[in-house]
Length: 88
Image 1 (cartoon, rainbow, N blue to C red):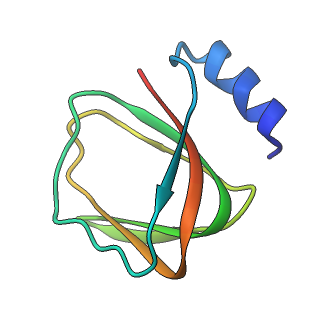
Image 2 (spheres, rainbow, N blue to C red):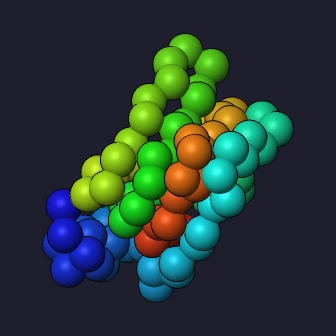
């Protein structure tokens, strides 16, 4: 998905403005939840989302959507990750 397509999807799904976030290499956040849903587009690197029942790695151009209150861990590889994300 392109950045323009992602921004259109955000608007269509009721998300707020997109923010750029840079995750350092080998980041491994502890398990946590958010009080809001998140939609994220990977721009560079790899971003892994580990949920209780699965782990998925997203690469540039791929989008993930995470529901509010879903326990998860965020991880990056050797290059870290640069992403656009928005909250709802």
